[in-house]
Structure formats: C-alpha cells, structure tokens
Amino acid sequence: SGSKSDQDPKNSQLNIEEDKKLNIEVLPENTDKEDLSFKVIIIGDSNVGKSSLANKAIKNKFDSGYSATIGFDFFSFFVKINNKVLKLQIWDTCGQEIYQSLITNFYRNCSFGILVYAINNRDSYEHLDIWLKEIKRESNPDAKIFLIGNKCDLEKERVVTYEEANIYSENMEFSRFFEASAKEGINAKEIFIEAARILYEDYITYKSEISSSVSEKTNPEIKITLNKKEHKSICC
Ligand code: GTP
Ligand code: MG
Image (tube, rainbow, N blue to C red; front, side):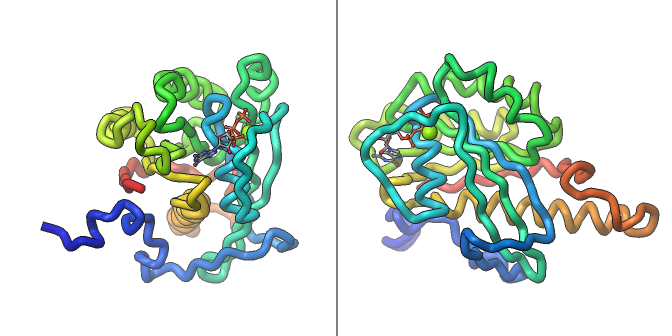
C-alpha cells in the first residue's frame, strides 16, 4: 500500500540521486575535454521520437512538428561522474527503411544502444525484434541496450502496455526498460545519464579487473567488457 506519490506516474521518474556513491553532474554541450568517450546509437522505427528524446535531453527543446532525420544526426552529451568526464557521442539515426543499409555502418564500435518504440504505435513495438537482431549483429557484441517506450504522455492512445514491454525487455535481456516522454521531459535526460553511469561503472570494474596485469594505456572504449547482466525497469 504505497503513498499517493508512489502511484503518480510523474513521481516514478528515475531518481539519479539515488546512488549516493556516485557524484553525477551534467556538463554543458560545449565541454571540450573528456577522459572517456563512448559511442551510443539511437535506433527504432521512424516517428517514434528518437530525435525528440535527444533534443529534449541535450538542448531541452521539444518541437511538435515532425521532420524526419535524414541519415543521422550527431549529439554530444557530457557528464562528470566522480572525477571523470564522460562524453557520449550520440548517433541519432533515421528510422526510415530506405536508409537502413546506410545506418548499418554506424553500429560499428558502438558501446551502447538505445532502442525506441512509441507506446501509441503497435508496429514500432512489433518491429523491435528486427532492430535488436540488427544491432546485435552489427555492433560490439557486448554493447548494452536500453529499451525505451516513448510518448508516454499519450496515455489515451496507448496500444502497448507497460507490463508486456517489461516482460519483453526481461526476456531479451535489455539492461534497462523505461517509458519516457520527450514532450513532457519525462526520463529524457535520465536515459543518457543512466547510460553514462553504466558505462562508467563498467569502466571502473574493467579497470580494477585488469589493473594488476595490463597497461593503463589500453583503450577502454574498445576493450571494455560489458558482461554484467542486470535488469531494472522504471515506469514513467
Ligand atoms: P525519424 O527521424 O523519422 O526516424 O523519426 P524520430 O524517431 O526521430 O521521431 P521525431 O523525434 O522526429 O518525432 C516524431 C514526431 O513525434 C514529432 O512530431 C514529435 O513532435 C512527436 N513526438 C516525439 N516525442 C514525443 C512525445 O514524447 N510525446 C508526443 N506526444 N509526441 C512526441
Ligand atoms: Mg529523427
């Protein structure tokens, strides 16, 4: 029997302050020095809101008009975690089928995938298997992947339940599932903060595993092994 605030979906956003061990600070877009850099790709059907989530998270902007991404867009997201500056190089791809052969190249050396569907678009949910197969085939095999159900502000148009997507996410071993709304700013920034936090923690784990035997010069972006299968999900 939770309190009233537990039941309000707006209050169940990711709490990034939750993890007291880590000191997390989002840095401005024009930050010019980083300690660690990771390539993150956003994929999913056209019109689900991939660009909108990136724009909301990074520029705090939302545009209700639709302009399809042609090829890809590129964003940088900087987060300072403890004493390290992480740069996420975010590749926002287009969902349109005619460009698929082009975006396959962008999966290479990817450390992290963000697979997006829209809760009011059944096709975008049914197509997740295809996207997942593609990213697993083309990217770093250890890359972690988040599942994001966007447009959760459109509750009246919902055709994909939270529960079914959560089960799918567990079965397919996504490392996180959450619903989000680029429009309302629900879990938009948190997607990238959480991705950075996981990449940082894996980097620290990796470093401590190799510290006795391998030189510090090893490139963490290429060699980091992301093998912890953890699963958490958060409703929007
Ligand atoms: P492609 O670039 O074609 O692959 O599409 P995309 O996935 O980047 O979608 P985009 O971000 O361009 O958004 C598509 C449409 O959905 C736009 O009209 C957005 O304004 C709208 N939209 C995006 N996110 C949300 C959301 O959270 N809620 C609502 N209501 N509309 C959204
Ligand atoms: Mg787009």
